[in-house]
Length: 74
Image (cartoon, rainbow, N blue to C red; front, side, top):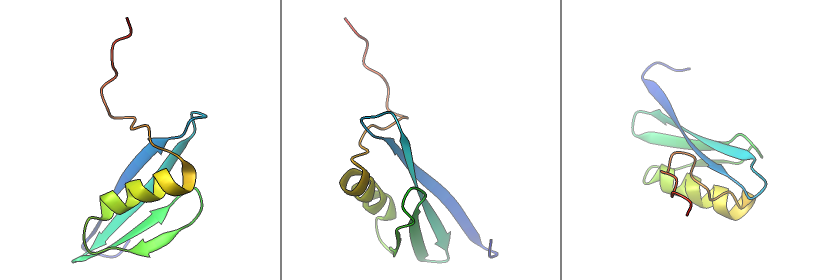
């Protein structure tokens, strides 16, 4: 990995319980987003995490956030 870069990830689950992950790589002010599932890539200077979430929802129907608190069942 190039010096001065960092990586974060956005993950969502689809209706079949499969996890889909998009990595956000930051180098300076430039950010690149890359999908582990399909290899899709895109440069994104602004709001890369929002664009990652949009890709997961549109391309993979993955909308369930694994980090969201679960609602208690009644």
